[in-house]
Image (cartoon, rainbow, N blue to C red):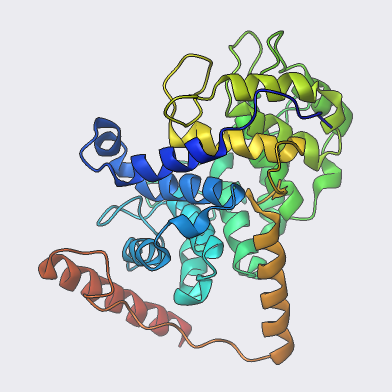
Length: 366
């Protein structure tokens, strides 16, 4: 484990940065990230949770926004009115779990959407248009796990597909034969861990490939001959933690690299020293420090990318619900006042789509 030393994690500055960029709706960055707003909410909220500052956000407002992004098919889009996609469906489930609000959505309906994207070979498409990637396999398994509904998808087939993406060097690609990449390694190792097949990983070969991602400056890269980037503090180290090989890298050097990417005036963490910060790298930098066990950042679950305390509470609630043996009734749709829509016409279209989706799902069950 790394030993904490100067410079310190600028906790207060990072809190202020996340809150500032979340509310500055006129900024260029806010506008160009419209399509992935829901994932941005997850990155910011999870970072704040790890900093002990989740209460800085308006929970009711966040939950309302997330629920308003759901589509009639059961999946979630990246923003209001956007098409449903596996990536944003996972982000929605993660955000609701962070705020203890998973009960506000129909888990069965979400999982019907997720299951509808599984292909005969076990892979998952990202949306109705059919792109296949191991990222989506991870999203599907993580969604199912967080909702306590792994039985709603074919886990064995999903695991077989992920294993087919393993390469000669122990790494994983986005599809069979795809180049090994640290980001795909996390999704595949995380998927195998959630699917109960972590033992199938060639741990020694993969751990060597992962530890070779550490550069002379202490940071980690995603592929050979690439620059270090703060986000790989998560993609690489989370996989190594799952493999119980996190001691194979220089943790103190990695910590120094992460902290050197902080903006010590305005807050936030960048991809590299001297670059401008963003919420994505701020979260993954803080999450990397959590995996290192430094700077007072509490533990994070390396498979689900969620604070360990949230996972413990979620599993306790699921165990209690299972012992009672009574399924929870589906939640009611948001009213216009409760929703994040500012136009009644937009809300009415959304509500009609949600009702049609519910009727279709009920028809399928009968």
